[in-house]
Length: 330
Image (cartoon, rainbow, N blue to C red):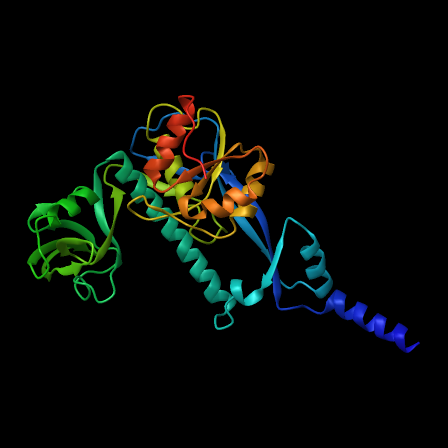
């Protein structure tokens, strides 16, 4: 009788008592060339837009919270999900609202960075904006995130490359006038340039981005958090703003955070994202270069991996596929 009562108690606890674990697995995947809830995911007004075909799907990871001991055992036995300590996903020193705000901010950043990367890749007329500041850098206390950079050292800026050119002949310690627009007002302030360990020119201490000067770009996909959709948003913009069909009709999926200059950075959960992509019908998957080893070890059958270090790499790889060539894989 005692053994039976103990087994009953363990069963009740196992079915009802939450454990400090979460289950991570494949999440939804969305075509950035298409619509979600009758709203275009990526839309452009004021610029020529060209027809597209195929798919450019962003991928996500799902997180199941509040699991019981029996749930955890079932997920452990499954190959489709991974059970990890809850604190890895939900830091114990942050509230649920704080975590959601951070994820929303990261997703909004991925949208802005995707626009900047695509505008820079296509060489469109742009307004250069400050997307971030180097802590204690040269521009700290002078510039703010969101400022529009109009000129540096007297040279007007029409692209991120113009900013690089404006600093090319400078040296650390040089004092340069920086003209910027904040809250609709144009201002000019002197900035003493800092030093960089990897180049002799002076450092302004900002992370520059670009927004289209001639059109309005809107990315609409609510309820998604994190930065990893940036690459696929940027590819969708490049496809829509250039003649020809970038995918060649293929079902392409992928993942990767993107910086305003087009550099693609690593993400988490790539085995689950590849699984979700393959289940949805993808045959090509864009992989951040730093995730290649993990991707190659867990790639599903029938999914061709493409190694991507920058947005330009991704565009070149899709062009290569259309030309019947094999792009760099993992």
